[in-house]
Image (cartoon, rainbow, N blue to C red):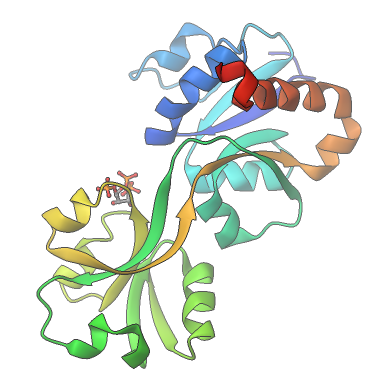
Length: 224
Ligand code: PRP
Protein backbone atom coordinates (compact mmCIF):
# COMPACT_ATOMS: atom_id res chain seq x y z
CA UNK A 1 0.00 0.00 0.00
CA UNK A 2 1.14 3.51 -0.83
CA UNK A 3 1.41 5.62 2.34
CA UNK A 4 0.32 8.72 0.42
CA UNK A 5 -2.84 7.04 -0.77
CA UNK A 6 -6.10 8.83 -0.26
CA UNK A 7 -8.58 6.65 1.59
CA UNK A 8 -12.23 6.47 0.56
CA UNK A 9 -14.45 5.02 3.31
CA UNK A 10 -17.51 3.10 2.15
CA UNK A 11 -20.34 1.75 4.30
CA UNK A 12 -21.03 -1.98 4.50
CA UNK A 13 -24.43 -3.32 3.61
CA UNK A 14 -27.06 -2.11 1.22
CA UNK A 15 -25.44 1.27 0.48
CA UNK A 16 -22.27 -0.52 -0.57
CA UNK A 17 -24.21 -2.27 -3.34
CA UNK A 18 -25.56 1.07 -4.52
CA UNK A 19 -22.02 2.52 -4.50
CA UNK A 20 -20.63 -0.07 -6.89
CA UNK A 21 -22.17 1.37 -10.10
CA UNK A 22 -21.05 4.85 -9.04
CA UNK A 23 -17.48 3.66 -8.53
CA UNK A 24 -17.56 1.99 -11.93
CA UNK A 25 -18.80 5.16 -13.64
CA UNK A 26 -16.14 7.19 -11.84
CA UNK A 27 -13.54 4.67 -13.09
CA UNK A 28 -12.59 3.61 -9.58
CA UNK A 29 -11.96 -0.12 -9.85
CA UNK A 30 -11.34 -1.93 -6.56
CA UNK A 31 -9.19 -5.06 -6.38
CA UNK A 32 -11.18 -8.34 -6.75
CA UNK A 33 -11.23 -9.07 -2.99
CA UNK A 34 -13.53 -6.06 -2.56
CA UNK A 35 -16.31 -7.96 -4.36
CA UNK A 36 -15.67 -11.23 -2.50
CA UNK A 37 -18.20 -11.51 0.35
CA UNK A 38 -15.95 -14.09 2.06
CA UNK A 39 -12.87 -11.87 2.08
CA UNK A 40 -11.83 -10.67 5.55
CA UNK A 41 -9.83 -7.78 4.09
CA UNK A 42 -11.01 -4.33 5.18
CA UNK A 43 -8.70 -2.15 3.07
CA UNK A 44 -8.56 -2.54 -0.68
CA UNK A 45 -6.37 -1.26 -3.45
CA UNK A 46 -7.94 0.27 -6.55
CA UNK A 47 -6.80 0.82 -10.13
CA UNK A 48 -5.56 4.22 -8.91
CA UNK A 49 -2.28 3.58 -7.02
CA UNK A 50 -3.04 6.65 -4.91
CA UNK A 51 -6.55 5.65 -3.85
CA UNK A 52 -7.51 2.88 -1.40
CA UNK A 53 -10.96 1.92 -0.17
CA UNK A 54 -11.90 0.87 3.36
CA UNK A 55 -15.17 -0.88 4.16
CA UNK A 56 -16.62 0.00 7.58
CA UNK A 57 -19.97 0.38 9.35
CA UNK A 58 -22.00 3.34 8.13
CA UNK A 59 -21.64 5.27 11.42
CA UNK A 60 -17.90 4.63 11.35
CA UNK A 61 -17.54 6.16 7.86
CA UNK A 62 -18.34 9.54 9.43
CA UNK A 63 -15.88 8.94 12.27
CA UNK A 64 -13.02 7.93 9.96
CA UNK A 65 -13.62 11.00 7.79
CA UNK A 66 -14.16 13.41 10.72
CA UNK A 67 -10.76 12.43 12.13
CA UNK A 68 -9.11 12.65 8.70
CA UNK A 69 -8.08 8.97 8.73
CA UNK A 70 -10.08 8.64 5.57
CA UNK A 71 -10.11 11.76 3.39
CA UNK A 72 -13.41 10.93 1.73
CA UNK A 73 -16.41 8.73 2.33
CA UNK A 74 -19.96 7.86 1.45
CA UNK A 75 -22.33 8.44 4.31
CA UNK A 76 -26.08 8.66 4.90
CA UNK A 77 -27.49 12.09 5.74
CA UNK A 78 -29.00 10.39 8.83
CA UNK A 79 -25.51 9.71 10.19
CA UNK A 80 -24.38 13.28 9.39
CA UNK A 81 -27.38 14.65 11.28
CA UNK A 82 -26.68 12.41 14.25
CA UNK A 83 -23.04 13.45 14.70
CA UNK A 84 -23.02 16.94 13.17
CA UNK A 85 -19.20 16.78 12.86
CA UNK A 86 -17.81 20.25 12.02
CA UNK A 87 -14.81 18.67 10.23
CA UNK A 88 -16.97 17.03 7.58
CA UNK A 89 -17.90 18.77 4.36
CA UNK A 90 -20.69 17.08 2.38
CA UNK A 91 -20.71 18.67 -1.08
CA UNK A 92 -22.60 16.04 -3.09
CA UNK A 93 -25.89 14.21 -2.75
CA UNK A 94 -25.10 10.91 -4.49
CA UNK A 95 -28.77 10.16 -5.11
CA UNK A 96 -28.47 6.65 -3.62
CA UNK A 97 -29.63 5.11 -0.35
CA UNK A 98 -32.95 6.90 -0.38
CA UNK A 99 -35.09 6.16 2.66
CA UNK A 100 -36.57 8.07 5.58
CA UNK A 101 -36.00 8.37 9.27
CA UNK A 102 -39.27 7.78 11.09
CA UNK A 103 -40.92 7.33 14.43
CA UNK A 104 -42.80 4.04 14.69
CA UNK A 105 -44.92 2.25 17.25
CA UNK A 106 -46.90 -0.96 17.64
CA UNK A 107 -49.63 -1.06 15.01
CA UNK A 108 -52.25 -2.48 17.34
CA UNK A 109 -51.54 -0.34 20.38
CA UNK A 110 -54.52 0.57 22.52
CA UNK A 111 -52.67 3.57 23.93
CA UNK A 112 -54.05 6.55 22.01
CA UNK A 113 -51.41 8.87 23.50
CA UNK A 114 -48.67 6.94 21.71
CA UNK A 115 -50.22 7.33 18.28
CA UNK A 116 -50.65 11.09 18.64
CA UNK A 117 -47.42 13.11 18.74
CA UNK A 118 -49.35 15.99 20.32
CA UNK A 119 -50.03 13.81 23.39
CA UNK A 120 -46.51 12.55 23.96
CA UNK A 121 -45.21 13.38 27.44
CA UNK A 122 -42.55 11.12 28.88
CA UNK A 123 -41.69 8.37 26.54
CA UNK A 124 -39.08 5.62 26.05
CA UNK A 125 -37.56 5.45 22.59
CA UNK A 126 -35.22 2.80 21.16
CA UNK A 127 -32.82 4.08 18.52
CA UNK A 128 -29.27 4.15 17.22
CA UNK A 129 -29.62 7.95 16.86
CA UNK A 130 -29.52 9.20 20.49
CA UNK A 131 -28.54 12.80 19.67
CA UNK A 132 -31.01 13.24 16.88
CA UNK A 133 -33.76 11.61 18.97
CA UNK A 134 -33.08 13.86 21.94
CA UNK A 135 -33.21 16.96 19.71
CA UNK A 136 -36.37 15.78 17.95
CA UNK A 137 -38.30 15.25 21.18
CA UNK A 138 -36.86 18.32 22.91
CA UNK A 139 -38.32 20.48 20.11
CA UNK A 140 -41.71 19.03 20.97
CA UNK A 141 -41.16 19.68 24.66
CA UNK A 142 -41.07 15.96 25.35
CA UNK A 143 -38.54 14.29 27.59
CA UNK A 144 -37.46 11.08 25.88
CA UNK A 145 -35.69 8.26 27.70
CA UNK A 146 -33.41 6.78 25.11
CA UNK A 147 -32.57 3.10 24.81
CA UNK A 148 -29.50 2.67 22.63
CA UNK A 149 -29.72 -0.23 20.19
CA UNK A 150 -27.61 -0.90 17.13
CA UNK A 151 -29.98 -3.07 15.08
CA UNK A 152 -33.22 -5.06 15.23
CA UNK A 153 -34.86 -1.92 16.61
CA UNK A 154 -38.28 -3.20 15.62
CA UNK A 155 -38.16 -5.73 18.49
CA UNK A 156 -38.12 -3.03 21.15
CA UNK A 157 -41.83 -2.05 21.18
CA UNK A 158 -42.88 -5.66 20.60
CA UNK A 159 -40.95 -6.79 23.68
CA UNK A 160 -41.93 -3.65 25.66
CA UNK A 161 -38.37 -2.37 25.85
CA UNK A 162 -39.63 0.96 24.50
CA UNK A 163 -42.84 2.74 23.51
CA UNK A 164 -41.47 4.00 20.22
CA UNK A 165 -38.52 3.54 17.88
CA UNK A 166 -36.72 5.96 15.62
CA UNK A 167 -35.22 4.08 12.69
CA UNK A 168 -34.74 4.06 8.94
CA UNK A 169 -37.69 2.99 6.83
CA UNK A 170 -37.36 2.11 3.17
CA UNK A 171 -40.08 -0.21 1.86
CA UNK A 172 -41.76 -0.44 5.28
CA UNK A 173 -41.66 -4.23 5.16
CA UNK A 174 -39.55 -4.63 8.33
CA UNK A 175 -42.03 -2.51 10.30
CA UNK A 176 -44.98 -4.42 8.88
CA UNK A 177 -43.42 -7.85 9.44
CA UNK A 178 -42.94 -6.97 13.10
CA UNK A 179 -46.38 -5.45 13.70
CA UNK A 180 -45.29 -1.80 13.74
CA UNK A 181 -46.49 1.33 11.96
CA UNK A 182 -45.00 4.72 11.19
CA UNK A 183 -46.25 7.58 13.33
CA UNK A 184 -44.24 10.44 11.87
CA UNK A 185 -41.51 10.93 9.28
CA UNK A 186 -38.65 12.99 10.70
CA UNK A 187 -36.58 13.49 7.56
CA UNK A 188 -35.86 12.04 4.13
CA UNK A 189 -32.43 10.45 3.87
CA UNK A 190 -29.93 9.88 1.06
CA UNK A 191 -26.20 9.18 0.85
CA UNK A 192 -23.66 11.98 0.48
CA UNK A 193 -20.05 12.20 -0.62
CA UNK A 194 -18.24 13.48 2.46
CA UNK A 195 -14.79 15.04 2.73
CA UNK A 196 -12.53 15.89 5.64
CA UNK A 197 -12.12 19.70 5.62
CA UNK A 198 -8.41 19.64 6.46
CA UNK A 199 -7.69 17.05 3.76
CA UNK A 200 -9.58 19.24 1.33
CA UNK A 201 -7.07 22.02 2.01
CA UNK A 202 -3.91 19.91 2.12
CA UNK A 203 -4.74 17.61 -0.80
CA UNK A 204 -7.08 19.86 -2.71
CA UNK A 205 -5.98 18.89 -6.22
CA UNK A 206 -6.52 15.16 -5.78
CA UNK A 207 -9.70 15.51 -3.75
CA UNK A 208 -11.25 18.09 -6.07
CA UNK A 209 -10.44 15.87 -9.06
CA UNK A 210 -12.20 12.92 -7.42
CA UNK A 211 -15.16 15.03 -6.35
CA UNK A 212 -15.45 16.34 -9.90
CA UNK A 213 -15.58 12.76 -11.24
CA UNK A 214 -18.56 12.05 -8.99
CA UNK A 215 -20.17 15.38 -9.86
CA UNK A 216 -19.87 14.59 -13.58
CA UNK A 217 -21.57 11.21 -13.32
CA UNK A 218 -24.41 12.74 -11.31
CA UNK A 219 -25.00 15.64 -13.67
CA UNK A 220 -28.07 15.40 -15.94
CA UNK A 221 -25.86 15.75 -19.05
CA UNK A 222 -23.92 12.59 -18.22
CA UNK A 223 -27.17 10.62 -17.83
CA UNK A 224 -28.31 11.67 -21.31
C1 PRP B 1 -32.60 -0.96 8.01
C2 PRP B 1 -33.45 -0.32 9.09
C3 PRP B 1 -34.70 -1.18 9.11
C4 PRP B 1 -34.80 -1.65 7.67
C5 PRP B 1 -35.86 -0.86 6.94
O1 PRP B 1 -31.90 -2.03 8.55
O2 PRP B 1 -32.77 -0.31 10.34
O3 PRP B 1 -34.59 -2.25 10.00
O4 PRP B 1 -33.54 -1.39 7.03
O5 PRP B 1 -36.00 -1.28 5.60
P1 PRP B 1 -37.45 -1.62 5.00
O6 PRP B 1 -38.34 -0.49 5.32
O7 PRP B 1 -37.20 -1.77 3.51
O8 PRP B 1 -37.90 -2.92 5.61
P2 PRP B 1 -30.78 -2.77 7.73
O9 PRP B 1 -31.35 -3.87 6.92
O10 PRP B 1 -29.97 -1.77 6.95
O11 PRP B 1 -29.91 -3.43 8.87
P3 PRP B 1 -29.57 -2.93 10.36
O12 PRP B 1 -30.71 -3.39 11.23
O13 PRP B 1 -28.30 -3.64 10.66
O14 PRP B 1 -29.42 -1.44 10.36
